[in-house]
Length: 270
Ligand SMILES: C[S@@+](CC[C@H](N)C(=O)[O-])C[C@H]1O[C@@H](n2cnc3c(N)ncnc32)[C@H](O)[C@@H]1O
Image (tube, rainbow, N blue to C red; front, side):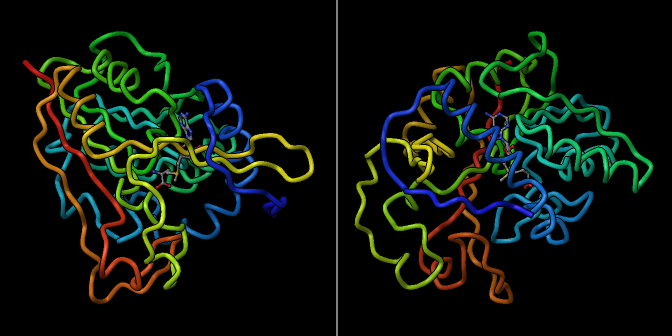
């Protein structure tokens, strides 16, 4: 069972190395509870873009993956990559948490399939240049990486000319609000432009135990265009009328008023 250690939320600078170390340990601790809580909603070979319940079957952000080499960053238990596999693609999952990848293997064994995975941080992708046709991430690694510009450069490096990138992150406007699924999460009292990372500090040890990095909408647009991407779409899923699931700070209360997820779709220049 996930040990809920008392933590103190803060905003303060954290570099790439400390972000990786904190988040790796956190996801290793949290993985069992995460899969127990969300595994059924995710679906063993389901492709969920965010807590609103929007799925790739409806969005089509990746395009046709048949016969394509597809890299998933922050794959968790590989549900999205398994979706790619079932549609004739050749997925590879990358995740910083070995425990998440053990869950991926468990699900593979239950269904007699195999999604190749690698345990690594996404800031330095351990693949050759031009190795993939498609790179994607569904609330995976991107908001855990300190240097977004360098990360987009890394994603471009491993993508073949004309390849597709699609990633979902917390909608940048959410950073103005408290992370509260109730009415308390409707009051904007934090600067949208404050890029200082959100940090949880272990009360007992004083160590950084979790980090998320914030980029504005414009930061992502700038990073994508700098590295040769042409933005095809920015999907901002609306909260569905029949959806009542609360996931962290995502809920109907907030979702009917403000976007919770931003899904960027972009193509690398030919
Ligand atoms: C919210 S989960 C999303 C996973 C999957 N898409 C899902 O919906 O379950 C975020 C994942 O990103 C991984 N992650 C965090 N930091 C990372 C990093 N620097 N590099 C690669 N993966 C990372 C975590 O281990 C976790 O599995």
